[in-house]
Image (cartoon, rainbow, N blue to C red; front, side, top):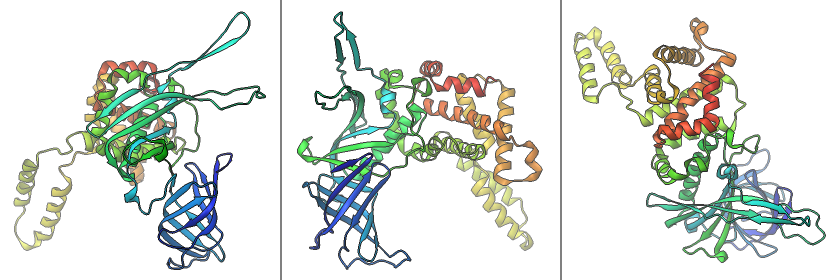
Length: 461
């Protein structure tokens, strides 16, 4: 393997499983951005695909290769652009360290991952120095025990601390030691790649909530088969969306740190994974906002309203009446319409509208219920609640339906950002309550983190 900046370059011979033709080529990996294989000739002619103005576009499930240094590599879900004398292969999943004919052969029990912002969130200081009277420096690197979290009956999650220190010859004049936090996953049974990526996505989304920032997978190493054996170690590269700008975080810019929740971390993480399926669609959307903080005020507002409605649907009673009482109410209205033929088309139309839509709570009701649930933190009086709810509803209605007669009721420009931030704070506090953060813990993280700044800036002014 050749390293050129962020690029990792693997030269070798490549082929499709169970075929005889080997082709020389170069695999280039830029973690989280690009996995591209350039082949000097065509693979099997049996591959079929449409012709485009650039060449033939073909697909194959797997391409495997051996590098010049003897490393085994597998590429999955390959899209191929076949040119006159060469092929360019694009993929989103590369396995370094083994050959696999299909994804079903990939089974894991031990996984190590590093994530963006994980070091800042863990915020453990391992390194200290001391200079004696002879001006000799002693560098101390402390050892910290890992944190173990048992998640349901599915897996153990470990948070481990270490450091990176390069091997340096005597001629070097400087040294760089970097703290590193690693998460390890030990599953109670072998899992496939889809299940593994699902666990990692849930961990990423939890860290997004905690750090109030987009989080992406930096590195993943897995141990194939049952035992944690270095001879079976594989490195997996999976393309993921990255933010336009990656920056270091201070603890004051986060919602909460590991230290804030350390005492309750088992309970909180288990609650998170228990609700993971319900939260996934919510955080699929919220992660887009965290990745694109510079989006327009209108888009931010419309998306956060949608997130609030998703949250209500997943965590609170979405119907105004029980289904039985709703049916009785609709039948009473329908039965009051005469049975004459001239009323039949209207009767069917009213029945469809009332049955399908009239029992779901509207945005105004949803907002009031979510504010009520979190108001022990915000401490808003009824006048301010009603004013806020009315402003959100009127503004949402204008920007969604673009009714010019309602334009004067809608909030605009910086006021729209402030309104969206208020909604975001309600979303955050309700999520924390769903995870069983008690008021003492919420007040504690409010004092130290970003939540207190948001509340001060958008609610108190």
